[in-house]
Image (tube, rainbow over all chains, first blue to last red; front, side, top):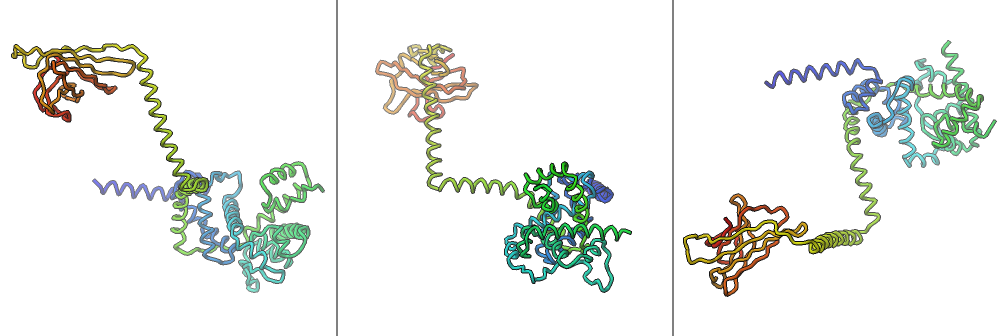
Length: 203
Length: 240
């Protein structure tokens, strides 16, 4: 009597897996909200390379911190009350926004971040690893990376501190020892130019 | 340019407090200049997130993440309890909490006994009613000269019930012997109190009945001592 039951469960289980693989991202998220563990695992399988790549850049290659942040990202997906809806735009965009929010919260809670504030001097480089540092090899495959590389050094540094280190504008003003107004107008200029370069890249 | 316009970049980089955020969203709807700038800059800001490469994680990461998620989700209620107990331990030292508990227990006991007392006092104001009367006959009908006889009453006063037994011409007892009243309910016997008669053989007993006590017959036995839970001696009288 046991054998048929097991076989049934096996069939049912496999059927479920196949169906999960066919589901849309937002359908998976709806299941995750209902605490459907296989749906969370399916999301993991789909996007872990993306999330891992993003976080490891944010932590500047620190694998231990990356693991902690990735865990927090999935905990957030698991416990979030505001589910993703297609009106919020592309799911992957939403997922990366959630990921960056967790990254920023993580480094801001970390008191080391505050100490780093004082340690990073004007002269120090900030060691942001760009995906295509070997420009000489001409391996640029991302539009934004290409556009960012066209910015001036101070502009690029500002974007990296702000976006990839999670510093606030006020903190950056302190680090750079410049008035906040200067930082803001530099950001303004940087973003405008980025947009222009992205549009040109599109042509 | 208004003062609010100055918040544009802080809004974009999500550095505003919740209140300021709401205020700026409102401002965006009323300031075409900011709205235009915001649209232009968000596009570039949002595209920054793609400035990285996909990387395959270590194989062990998946189980680490899944375990963390499920444990983390389960841990939350425990953390809440811990938070509360920490809150209380901050409010009370062990000594004060001990004293507090003792006072609480004492208050409950006093309250309860006070309620009982009130109930009894209330009951003594009520009239006493005879609910049931049992006529008691000698158990051994063949003993002609046995004139032992009496009656038992169930009295009701408010919610309180008591049993009163009165018997004449009881045989005299030895030093430690007593008469014991038994309440019978379908063959089950429960104690209804013990008594000793006077020299003339007249015995009397008042026994407070438990609230839900039910019985339909009464028997009285002669017992070697007042400590029995089941009859050991001979039956002297009983209700028919």
